[in-house]
Image (cartoon, rainbow, N blue to C red):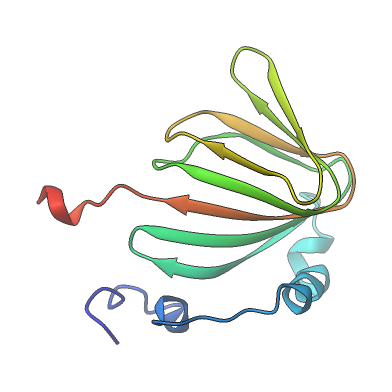
Length: 133
């Protein structure tokens, strides 16, 4: 394992030099996951996990909600299916349909609401802490 990925012992394949994922198959697996049956109505899987970069596949049932949160780095939300609403400060709402991409700057508080059964790719970039040490 590379020194960059040495701390990622739980999911060692997620920091590989090259990663290829079949999104359709992963979406089906998420629908079978125990978390899909819980009250939260959502399921997710980390597809790539480097020190400064993550990609997470998220599937949400209609009406489910991810309450207000924020990321320490910038994020992107790329909707694959369904429709979601991203609630932002000052009562701003961004409604996203399949194929649309939304980016948010670091530390911007937001929450996500699934209008329909939905799936999206969440990409998170963290600040490079190694260069600050």
